[in-house]
Length: 275
Ligand SMILES: [Zn+2]
Ligand SMILES: [Zn+2]
Image: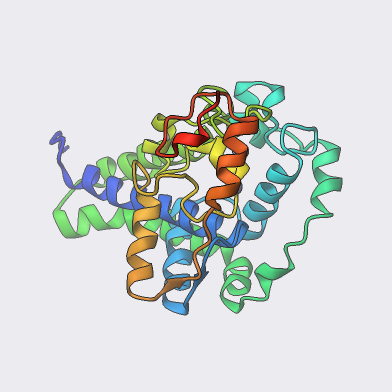
C-alpha cells in the first residue's frame, strides 16, 4: 500500500475535490441557483460534469433547497435552519424528514428555469448514473490504472476521505458560516464572514456579504482573496464562455455598511465606516 503523502491517490483526491467544488460553487450555487452570470454551452457542460463529481443531490433539489434557504432564512421553512442548532444546520437536516414548512414553502419556489435547459433536463433524468460514474467510478479507477496505485488505497482516498472532506466543506457554509464570524454588511441576519470556510469551500465563506448581495458572482466583496471560484469564473469570462457578470452596487454596499453593518468593516471605502 502506498504511504507516500504526495501519492497519486492524494493528488487525484485533491484534483477531484477541486473539480467537484467548482461544480457546487460556480455551478449549482452561483449559476443555477442565483443566475449571477450567463454561461455558454461548453462551460455549462463543464459545470454539469464538475457538479456530478461532487455526488450531492440532483441539481433541481439543490437549487430549490438553496432558494428556499435564502428566501426563508432561519425560519422553519429554511431546510437547514441554523436556529435549530449547529449540528442540524451542518448535516442533521439531511438525516431527518423535512419540516412541513420546508415542503409547503418549497412548492412556492419557482425552479421552472432549470429544466428549460435541455442539459439540466438530461442530467436530472439520468442523475444517478452521472453521480455513480463521475463521483465514484472515474476518480477511483484513475490512480490504479494510470499510476499503479492499489485499489484499496484509491477507494479509501477517493470514495471516503475525498468525499467526506468535500461534503463537509459544502455543509460548513450552512453551519460555520451561520455561526462564527463578523457581520460587516448586515448585523440583523445570522450569516457571517468566515475566511476559514472560504478556504475550504472555494470562496463561499463570505456569507454575510452573500446573503446581502446574493446576485454577486463573486459571493464576496473583494473578488479573488481566498475566492478560487471567482478567479475561475474570471478566467472563463476572459475567453467569453462566462459573461454578463452581476456584482453588488457600490452605493448599495455603502448604505448597507453604514446603516446595518456591525462596525467591523475594514475596507477601502472611507465614508462607509460606521461613525
Ligand atoms: Zn446561508
Ligand atoms: Zn446562495
